[in-house]
Structures are given as C-alpha cells and as structure tokens.
Image (cartoon, rainbow, N blue to C red; front, side, top):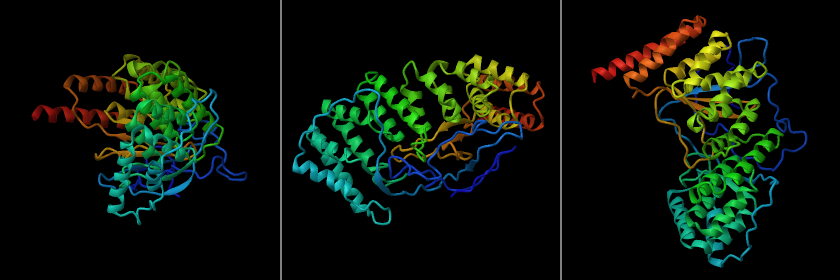
Length: 430
C-alpha cells in the first residue's frame, strides 16, 4: 500500500510515482460479506483537516511529480459492475452477429494484455483489427453488443500501447466511430446499466457529441444512481471522480443540487465541479457550504474552491473576505487558498480517460484522499497574466493580509504576492 501522510499544518511533499496508484478495477459486483473494505463511510467531521486538533483527519497523500515520470500499465480481468436503473432501459434488438464481426471482436478480446507479453507487432495488429471492426459499420454493432452483455473487461492501465484504458473502452469508442441509430441505442442502453464511473463518463461524452442536449436526462439519472450506489458502499475502490466531471460538463438544471448534496461525502470533487460550472452557477452553493459550520471538511474544500474563482466572480471574492474577517478559514485552507490566489488551479483526475496524463509542468502535485478515494491534482501558476490581472490579485491579497490571518497564512499570502509581482516584472522586461 502507499505511504500516507497526515496534514496538520504545512504539506509534506512525497516524491513518488503516480503509476498504478489508484485501483480502477473490481472483480465482483459487490464486496463479499466480511470484507473490511466493503463499507464506505464518510468521516463524521468531513474529509479535509480543519483548524481544531480534536477533529479526526482523513489520511491524505500529496505528491509532487517529476515531469518525466512514466505511467506503466496495469492489467486485470473480471466482471463489470452494474446497477438497476430507475427508468426503463432503451430496448436494443438482439441481432445475430456475422461470423466475421464475431471473429474480429474475439481477436480484440482474446489477447494477453500484460505489458510484459504485448509486443509492438501485436499492438499494431490489435489496432488494425479495431479499425476493421469500425469499417463494418452498423453490421459490427451486434458483435460488440454480444461482448458488452457478457460483463467482462480487461483494465489496460494508463499509458497502454493500445491507446485505451480498457477493452470495453475501445469497443465503446468503436461504437462512437460507427455512429448511427443502432450504435447510439446500444451506447444509451449501456449507459443505463453500467455502474463503472469512467464508463458512465465516456458514454455521456459520446452521446453528447452525437446528439447535443438530447440525452441530458438519461445522463443525469445514470450519474445520480451510480453515486447513490457508491454512497451505499457498493463501489468500494472505484474512483467516482468522472461522475463529477459529467455533472460539471453535461449536468442539467439539477446539477448544482446534485453537487451540493454530495459535498458531505466527496467534498473536493463536489466543490471543484461547482467552481467550474459555467457562468458562476456553483458559486452560491460554494458560499453556503463554506459558511456551514456543521460540515467542516466540505467547508474547507469550499473555501479553497472559492479562492480559485475569486477573480472570475466578484461574489466569490467578497465571500472569501467575509470568511476571513469572521475567522472561518483554517490554516490548512489558507495555504491552499494562497496558492490559488497566486494562480494555481486544482482539477479532478481524469480516471479512465484514453492515455490520460498530467500536465508536463514543474510543481504539479497530486492529492489522494484515502477513505473517500478522491484523486485530484494542482497546476501552479504558469504565467501569462496581464498587469491588470496581477494588480487585481495583489489587491485582494493585500485586503486579506490586512485581516491578520496568522503567521503561516500571512507568509503564504506574501509568497504568492511576491511571485505574481515578479512574474509581472519579468513580462515587462521581455
């Protein structure tokens, strides 16, 4: 297991690799009775450490990454996880596959996918077979459907030479390339049945690309049902981050309520998604969460998210000042907020994306919260701010410093202020 680091003040940065860290695959639909990991219980006091030393703190792992770190593949095979949808699934005709398309699917799924065994020639042949399947058009859909309904998969891990994180992901991408009513119906039917968060996100993206706005209700239902299953402890070990990205990108009018509701369990995911909703739709929810004294972990995450959007939305900046004036920002949150005010941004990890990789920049940090299995990363300020933007940030930092936030917080704010002024000076000299 990985080394855990408790945060009680300044963050301890552990220089480790990111590969193979977060499990993306479970081999059964539900954990067996007696499994100590079968119950997902959010900590009573939230998921982020607050100022009070008496509150329990969730174990969090922070890593600063090397720019050139490799991402080796991890291979597992087993069954998928599914759910019982609240609405009647779209019926998909069960046409008999042709021998040729069935053979093509078999060639894509009956291979030793371990990185030690997969040669470059085999990878090239596999990609050719996938393209040949796509070229069959609608005739390939029954063969793909036959495999998907077997509820089997192989997790290929990040950086697979095949270009996909799993075999099912490759076949779903084939459906996306094929297009047409048969392929779309199968994707929608799969969306209504799967409980794999990354697969829900993939299908939501494909359906939205094919028919923008048409399936928002079905997408929202799939996300809510899967999150409810995870909250009930039935998806232990699965990263639900992709579901929050779906709400952020394709959520309907209920997305804000869904995100606010789930902040009690997945505080960082919820608040990061709220902060990135278009036109500041999530800011009022962030302010409510940040002012709620009953939810310390979610409150801390909301404060940090407000700092990220304090210059986009005036209400967020005003709320941050009000919270600081009332002494409602913990030392831990001050440190993260100072980085955000200096231009750093946090993002949800793209679990299950095709060859997903983190930005190749110095100072990128990853965060892993153990009991809630939240995985996100931060990117430092990369420059490019205008003098007006720099002056705006410096002015807000000066207002916060005037409130005497404490020695560690004041130092962090001063560091962010100095770095921005220095970047502005460098830009003027260039």
